[in-house]
Amino acid sequence: MLKRTMSMTAAGAALVMAAVAGCGSNAQPIQVNLAASEVLTLAAQKTAEVTSYTVDAVVNLTHPQEGSGTVQGRMLYQSKPQLAADVTLDTVNFGQRSVPGGVRAVLQGDTVYVKVEALKELVGATKPWIKVPLKEADGGSGEVNELLSRIQQFDLGNMTQLVTASQDVKAAGNETVNGEDTTHYTGTFPVDAAVQQLPADEQEQARDHLAELKDVKFDIWVAADGLPRKLAMNGAKDGASLDATLFFKGFNEPVSIQAPPADQIGELPKDTTN
Image (cartoon, rainbow, N blue to C red; front, side, top):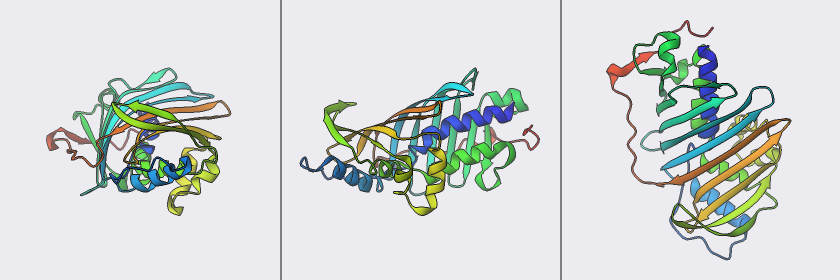
C-alpha cells in the first residue's frame, strides 16, 4: 500500500516537476518582427539563464488501464547558491485512489524532505517529515528518487528546447496572462525529434517521460522580455493522455526554501516496501 501511494505521489509530481524544474532569462525585449520559430529559439536561450521562479500547475492525465487523474499544486525553485525546490501538491488523485492531505516536498541539494499525511497510517510514522538522501533512495523510496531526479535533470529551459522542434509554430494573437501582455504561439512537435534538441545525457530520461505520447500540441505565451508566462502541453497515444498547464512568475526574484525543523524529521522505514 505504501509503495502504491508513493508511486502515485511520485508519478503525479514528476509530471509537474519534469516541466518546471529550472528556467532562465534576460530582461531585454524581444523584437516584434521575429518569426514565431525565432521567438521560441530566443525563449529557449533566455530560460536557460533564470536562477529562480514560481510556478502554478495543473496536470490532467489518463492511462488506459489505471483511469484518469489530476495533480494540482505550486512550486518555488532556485538553482543558486544550491539547487532547491519547495513543492506543494494540494491534489493528487488517479483512478479510484488519492493521496489524502496532498504532498509537500522540499529538495535541498542531494536531500529531499517529504511530507505525506498518509504515511502516518501506513507506516506508523511519528514525525511529519521523512528525509530521503537521493543517493540512498531505493526500494520503497525509489519512486521519490525518480521524482527528484527529474527535478535535477529537466527544466523549463529544456521544455522550451523541446518546442523548438516544431515545424508548424505560429503566432495566435496577443493576450494578457496574469496582468502581463504576451504573444500567444501555438504548434506541435514530434517527440523523437524534440528529444534530440536536449543534451545527450538527458535525452533518455526525456524520452521515457514522453514515451506515452505521440505528437505533442503546445501553446506558449511569451512576454516582451522573451520569457514564457504560460505553457500548455497536451498529447495522447494508445489511450494515454496528458494535459498540463503551467503559469510562471517571479523570475530571478529572491525565494526562501528552508528544510523542515530537525525535530520534525524522521527516516523512511526500511521494511515498508511490500
